[in-house]
Length: 450
Ligand code: JFZ
Image (cartoon, rainbow, N blue to C red; front, top):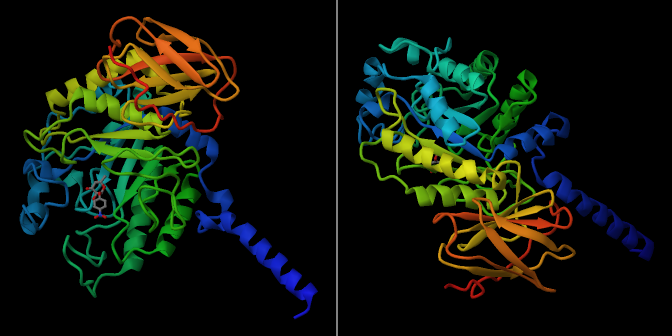
C-alpha cells in the first residue's frame, strides 16, 4: 500500500470516528422529531413531582401488578375491578396535596402491568367505567391539574399481562402465547396513546415495562415517532427503548433518564428524574413503613444537587384518599420548600459535587449550599475558579460570615444551622456561575463541629 493510500485510510477512519459521538445517542430518532431542549428545560426547571400508583389491587393492599399470580391469585386479581369503588376520590384534594408539597407535576398510572385502565378507554372493557365507581379518574385528575396549574402526566406501561395480544400473561410466564400478536398489540397501544393524548393533553408520557422480550427497539422507535406526530411537545421518559433506565445510553429511546428508588448521579448533560416511594410499596399497603421528613427533604435536595428531578410516589387507598400521615409528610416538605424554594426550582446542580455532608445548586450569580449536618458553625470549601463571594446568608434567615482566601472559601455563623434536615446558605458571587465546571470539594475533615 502506498503512503498516500495509507494516509487516506487514516483520514477516513478519523472522519468515521468523528461521527461516533453523533450517532451514539438516540440514533433511532431523527433529530427534528425529538422533544426540543426548551421543552425539556421547562420540565427540569420544575424539579419536583408526584407519582401516583393506583388501581383495584389496593383493595388487597398488595403491590400493583406484581402481586398478580403471586400474593393474589390471577383470577381473583383480575376480578377486583368489579368491587373497585373509591367513593372518596377527590381529584382536587390530591392536586391540593401535591401543590402544598411544592410539587409542580403529577404522573399517574393510567395503565400499569396488570392492564387495568383508569380511564374509560374505547379499546378495552377492562377499565374504570366498568367498575361500580364508573367515573373517569384520569379525566378528573387532568381537569383538577389544569385548574391548579400543575402539569398532568400519564404513566403507561408497555408490558400488559392482561391483554390477550401481549404474548406473556403474568410475571413468571416466559413462554410466549402463540395466539398473541405484537402487531395487533402495538396497534392497541397506538389507539390508547392517541386516545390519551387527544383527550387529556398530557405534558409527559412515562413509559415502563420495556424490558420483556416481545418488545423491541424497532417498536419503540416507531412508537416514539407515532406519539410525536400527535403532539410534538409531549415529553417521553426513557423507558420506551431497550436501553438502561438510569442513564441515557446508545439504546435510549426517550427524552430523559429514570433512576428508580435511588438518587441519580450528578449529570450536567442528560436530563433525569429519580422515582422514589414515600413508603416501601408503590401502591398502597396498610401500615407500610414511611420515610421520615428528614429523608424526604434530603432526597429532594440531593436530587436537585445532582441536576435531576424527584418524582416522589404516593399510593392512594382503595377508598380514594391519600393517607393522612402521607399528606402530613408532604406538607412538611412543602413547609421546607416555602423557605428554601429558591435553591430548588429553576436551578442547576453543582458546581460542588454532592456528598453526604453537602450538595449545591446554582442560578445566575448565586450558589446554594445545601448542608445536611446541623451542629457545625463553620465550613471551608474550595473557591470557585475565577469567581469570588460577595456575601453569604441562610435562606431561612441568619447571617453568615465569609472569608474568601485564594483557594478556599471559609464560612462561619453563630449557633446551629436553621434546619436540622437541610439548611441552605446562599453565596452571592461576583459573576454568573451557571456554567462553571464541577468542583471536587474534598470536604471531609474540613467541616469543623462545635
Ligand atoms: C417499574 C414497575 O415495575 C414498578 O411497579 C413501578 O411502576 C416502577 C416505577 O417501575 O419498576 C421496575 C422496573 C424494572 C424491573 C422491575 C421493576 N425489572 O427490570 O425487573
